[in-house]
Length: 293
Image (cartoon, rainbow, N blue to C red; front, side):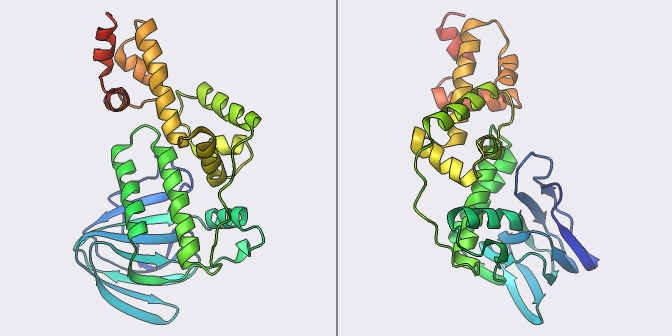
């Protein structure tokens, strides 16, 4: 996704304070807004989830001839279906985020787990000012990933996006989504290909989508099957393998710690040190010192 897919029909669209665009996230966008006022009508290319984070904001909405007004507070949620014009008026007075999820993502997941369903005709309900603890929790996790931009944030964001999409299908869609039983293990050949691919790309910003595509599987199917096969989620496995490779480089080479961080796929020295200590309970420097280097 290279843009949020918001197309103004009238008025001016508010601009986010920051966004996940440019972070390499696959199939999901997060936008953060703070204290903005707006009056616009727009069509959204993607399904949208708005979650109010703090403060109070007076919001007016017009959708399919029906109007609604409310004061948005922390935890309130708005769900906006794609491809349908919608009007918003709101006055600044709080922080909120908007999560954009492509229609194709919902269709793909619904088709995968409900192949006899009408995946091409999925409709989301327009929902104004509801409470949904699952949506709030997952959205806050996305905020954390965007704020920290830590190792494997793309993988984590992608996993959270799948969970949000499944929740939308189950609770707010026209298909009355009911998933089939969890998939079984990966075949021995598929698991070896996945592990070999991860090992060869530890220095890159791997995503679940990338690995799943290599195996010609959907991301959600691969993630579930990988965890059943290995007992660990893909993003966690990648982190642990990067730390193990870092241990080898710290022990067997004279590379600086900063250089080791780059060799094992960490964007910054500080992220590497924080993750290394979280996994091993000691810093990279202490690890080397303990080995007598």
